[in-house]
Length: 204
Image (cartoon, rainbow, N blue to C red; front, top):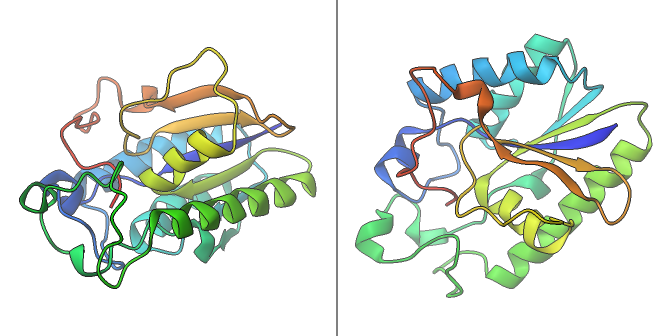
């Protein structure tokens, strides 16, 4: 039994390297990535799905729900970091890397507040998994997963990835220290026409 962390499929704004508004939907590539992901996750025989209700994550989770027959629950704690007035603007024009920026975005969320929220989200997932008789799938966002990896789990001999890939699968043990067994894996996309684009924006 485990917790599986999943990033949503690709959006057109990921590919364009733009900080995304709340209501950003999956792009055509992201929809196909989500379909391939759902086939893979079904093989894990999960017993529950918890997801961010932001459309790009929620739609990704819906594919898993359809493939497994499981009801989809949501948590606002799993939202991506709120970049406020930067949303809708190009990452490259602003010169901010969402993975490392410490500046508080205008009308947005500080790194410290975001990290505290992500810790609450992780604790919520751990508590939910403890009530289940099987694996919990958690569908969220790039910076959420990165922050969990940095602050909440044990990587062991593995190295923190440079970016969290769209529809990547990260599997962790359910008991402290929550050791990572599979990290940022996109094997389900290998050989497909929608393989991970390493130039797209991870987070934001």
